[in-house]
Length: 384
Image 1: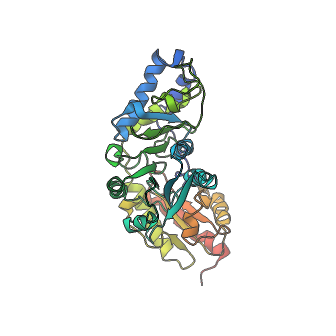
Image 2: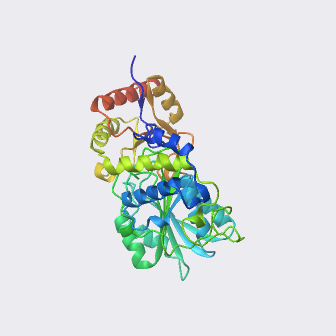
Image 3: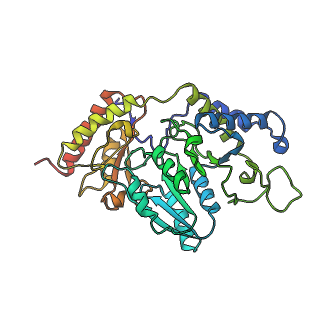
């Protein structure tokens, strides 16, 4: 029987790191008295320390546990003062775009967008143009480390320096790329940076991290018990408790801790996956029935192991369903990124097919995938 290839790892790794499942069971039985003492509390702080080390963040006390990157980005939007001028790149996931749009519709902020170039990169001249109407207002930029549609790694080092020089507050979505490429938050100095555990970190779903700058405004998205200062009606002002109302997800935190520890000991090597996708990309770009995104291919060193393509006239869902019949699992649609596909010229009716293999992918897998794609295309659009 032919093995199933899961090439949808940009959605979720689907293979938790060693020790994650066992740690989650341990967390299920953890007792956390008063949230301030005991082994469970100490374990939780160890996980904060591990997150700070992996992401180059020198303040573990400002590592906040969330239910995922979506919650963290919503929390960041909630904290933006009224009247602010906010720019988001067109590459952003709906986890950022939708709370920003809700805030704009409520009159809390002005929202503009920065375009990306044909290679899938947001460049400084475009940011200059996007912030031209800023005036004297407080300015914020939302930027994904990497596009979940195009796989392109953004020039965060350069953009972060630009933001610091111009007094623009940076919010980073690290969902794609976290655990796969080096991240230096102390140097980048974001006001907020959100992380999901279930992708490149190989952790569990339903848990995430929010890194909060010392000068970031604190406006809790959720109010409730925090285990401390219970006599007050207002939430505590100190981090991390200020942004961690409610019962902590101890199974998720323990599982996240195991994933972080594994990643610290086993840094990602994307070489094999990039080489495999480079081979597939060459074959697809040579086929006139296919449009590969981005239109101009950047070097693979500037991309995650993600490759998307469109077959004009053939719905991506149809292609994905046929590939699934051949034992190859991919993602089809607009990838929950409302502007990225549209800006790349993709219609909702078509959508994109996204290939995102595991880091351990072998070339023989790439050969099988390319052959299957070409065979599938021939069913609906025979080569001329």
